[in-house]
Image (cartoon, rainbow, N blue to C red; front, side, top):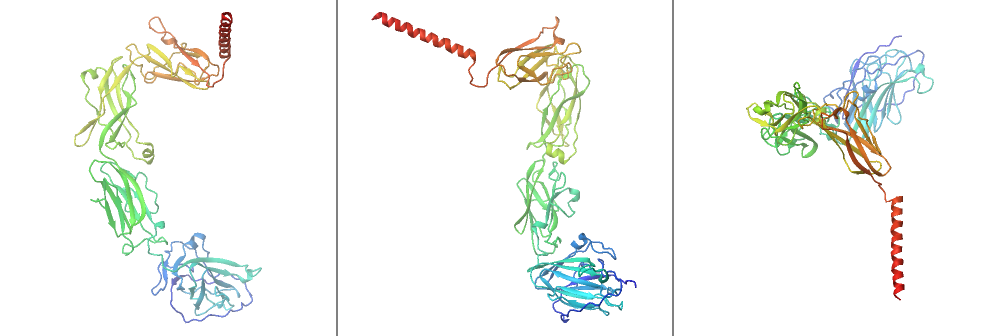
Length: 589
């Protein structure tokens, strides 16, 4: 015969008293037909809201799991079935809709088993009830289906808590004909978890389950589900805002109602900023009775940077502290990385710049351009564009604001444009300038010099050789000028000096210099290093190979053979003097 399974929903309802008495154990009849489980995951579920008249029920989970008819619950679905109740309360599992049943196989069962501090208090049967039985410990209700094919599962069961702790109700189906022993044929349809407490925790703010998050303006009104700040939400540009999202939840992950009398949220900023609830504030402290809200932090003084903290509390108890920064208006321009460009070159990148506020924060701001050139400066260079990429990213914030670049071209060989500067002009047409700096236009190498970083080394030292080159006008050579050409390779040689990376014709000067590293050998003594750049040695240039003297001295107190010999000679001389003095003394007597 076929199974008739009618869908229902089981509501969780607390009751103060029921008149149905305890039932005696009923012996199961022998099986005479094959059977299939009658109760499935979609037949028993936690109601989203407890029914009117509940007593001792603190909270019921909002059921979001989707169940499939005729299937057992998954682990995630079971986890969504929970209730919080008082340890002195009772809980009624009552059905929605038509009863489940009948069953086709005599002896098949549906069992409702309790683990934890609770027992079954009573049950209410349907119009065609299955045969009930209750275990001696009061924790397992068994409903056995007969051969009439009209038996139905119970209309409701009442659970009574006996103490505080975790209670689980496990609903299983038992196929009698499939058993090989007493527990074969069991199939778990659903598990409902109940937390029994001495006082309700639902509705009270739980710090461990609440969230405080720095958010972007676009998402400030969206409830937070993490304490991890949104990307780039911890800093804002001049005139911008920091948004602090606060969402208070109880231990059961229920949002605290705005109307709840429990809890007033305060948000306080350090000096230099103002804060307001969901709006621009005018003080350093803001309040909210709304437990799901956001606070907005702004500069206390326009164009002035702020760097500080936002402290969030509920009824004086610390919830979280967040650090943030609002940048100020441009105040300075720093110039670095000046290139020595080739004379008569086309316009190209010649240096870097960084705009900062008065507090020294690097800004995502591009300069307006150059200050006006004087006639003398204009004869040496022509100025070009300035550029930078002002996008805000977390990576940029961690690494520091990238520098912008500015361009220029050299017009005069060997020229120097003295005292130039960069400029930034704001919307009010107020300008700031960089410190003045000189731009050198370099030619190719005409002379060169070389030097070591020390006059004396110990074995194992790393020595640094620096070669400097100047053009025919005495200025540093332009960046990228090479140390030689094919057939005129540079030569660097020195005893007890092993070069780390050999010099090649493709090596180039930067800021008029080129460095090489050497490993110092172990043999002590005085030596010479010869630096020869044949490309620049000619009759037309006042240049020849450069020789550098250096020493390798012992790093220990060991005595050399020369020192021993010197000491012996000195000792012999001393002895001779003493003998001569003794002879004179004897002759006088």
